[in-house]
Image 1 (cartoon, rainbow, N blue to C red):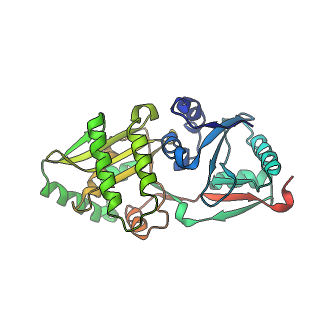
Image 2 (image 1 turned 135 degrees about the vertical axis):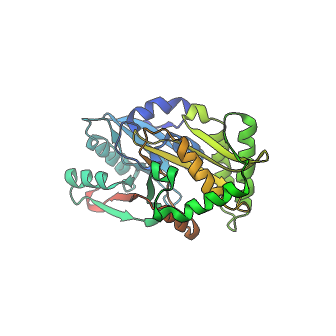
Image 3 (image 1 turned 120 degrees about the vertical axis):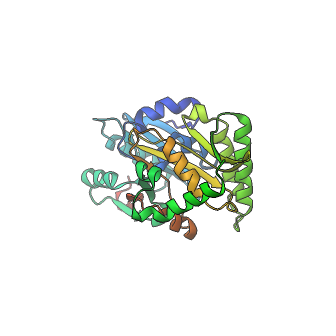
Length: 303
């Protein structure tokens, strides 16, 4: 199996597998695969008619893989078998990540009892109804409407601007750098800055869209997202000036309203176990908390 490094030119090939898929995990968005590719050394191949994505995990000293993704009528079991052989030759356990409930069901049907499944709540994806994020209707989202209404009262001349040129992209990157510098933790800031710059520099090539909120010409919040599949749109980056009350709420709503109506759901990704992020994501009342297990081939089943 020959794995190719993730490049911009690979978008259409990968999307021919991801967009028709029913799997809506944020890990499959090409924008994420390319954006974080420098850090995780993301690569890919086609095996047995299935897309196989490989990357390096900080928690492992060997390659790990996303669950193979096949087109309709394709048997992903062929790819799993080849990965099993590859892992055996390399002397490491076959590890498949991003295992959704339907992937779990498939593996158990075709390889019953051969995998051990690990589930970490910190990496579950938050899935929302797009219309709910856009309208903020109903009693459950009253507090969110209050934040937005207050922002609009205090900043009646705010504007939503697409990120469609280098100058706006640089303003957004500057905001992201300021946001990251305010965090107490020091690990990962440079990596996240690099990811954001990679994405903002190639929005068109990635098939992504971005928008920002400006007050008196100054960017106070921005968001970037892209399609995951035909029903789910992912929001991969969202930053705001925390000194401007309601900035996160307004960019969340305004960006959701720009997502095409053809997408019923919005994936706002994981909370990574960060308490404040978890509280915020739960407060928007997700329609689904999509679990993503790690499946490890049991030792006695290694070939």
